[in-house]
Image (cartoon, rainbow, N blue to C red; front, side, top):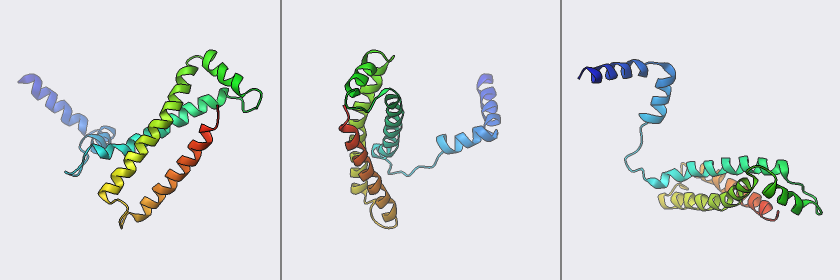
Length: 145
């Protein structure tokens, strides 16, 4: 009983600290609707896939040579000579497919729940523009070796 009361007092004291209170209010005690489901995770997962694509794409761009005679050699260099280059390349390639799957599920959730209706019509339109840009960027990446 004594250990529990000490833990309880320490928790109350710690929750009064500004940074801890900010984290607690936005991550732990955050109010959520009662009808939330696992489909609501796909917006965050889309952002995570985008972050991974950007990071691996930057690393690959540092080693890639966009020249007609040197492109294949630079990919071979990434795969054989760069430490973990094979992992970065395959993560980038498979991450692109995962990104599209996650975004399509995210769009399907939006269609199912009617997220395109007012007052969120403008947000939906921005999302459609982002998806079209994503598809155009993905196509540009797919034509590289």
